[in-house]
Image (cartoon, rainbow, N blue to C red; front, side, top):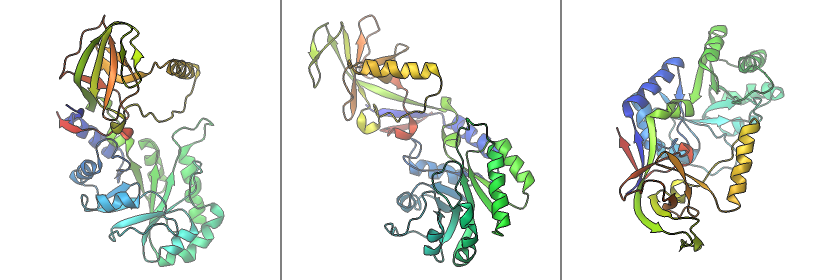
Length: 343
């Protein structure tokens, strides 16, 4: 009895091919929990479709993934002087976001991150002249721009990249490769047409692995079902049942990521109103679970346990049976499955 990730493999791979065809030179990203699939599986997929490079989040991830992927590994977290050394092969490329970082990586393969409108990390325009001497002692693989997802001010992503291309060119820095994130296919094509001597390579994770929502599905198996009457006490906190129904124990708890929700940026009146309503219900211990039964998301009977969740299903719904599987709406990047099932 498990929390399972079901994958329609043919459909998933067809989607991968669609994205790869749209972005020539695409670099697949495999970081965090491997977008819900795990590092080893995504490394295998990247090797299967012939990628020469795989982007990972940290040096610790690179140390693991190097045994599963034979091509180059691009570490996305920028190098910092004084960081813990991790033994890595020469095929690992480090991202660097400061002149000091470049100078500290003598002999290394590096990608230099430029400060985009994200304002997360990167070298600034006024530092470009200092890079001339610094890059003489490294093997420069290219520059990179990590762009924002939304642009409420109406600015143009392509124009932002062009601005940096012009700055780098004015500083007489090599422009053979530009690594980019969060561009549309048509935007990358425009840039490639305008700068034919530069190779633009998109680093893509979410769109590549999770872009077809119908290709994957989480399901939790029912482990136990207990009939309760209104007023019966149950669970760790011995709360009272609000009405007649069933307590349904389903595979999937906090260790799987169930009940762990990342904050979301809300836009518009309705999403904010729903957020306020959810917060209000939570104050009276009413929390909607990700599990669906008989066409409805069901309430947690109490907060999820480490490996299971207890749901309340009212008596007017069909009674779940042990062994049934409940579809679960879970965020891939925060979920750890027990088993993966190919369909």
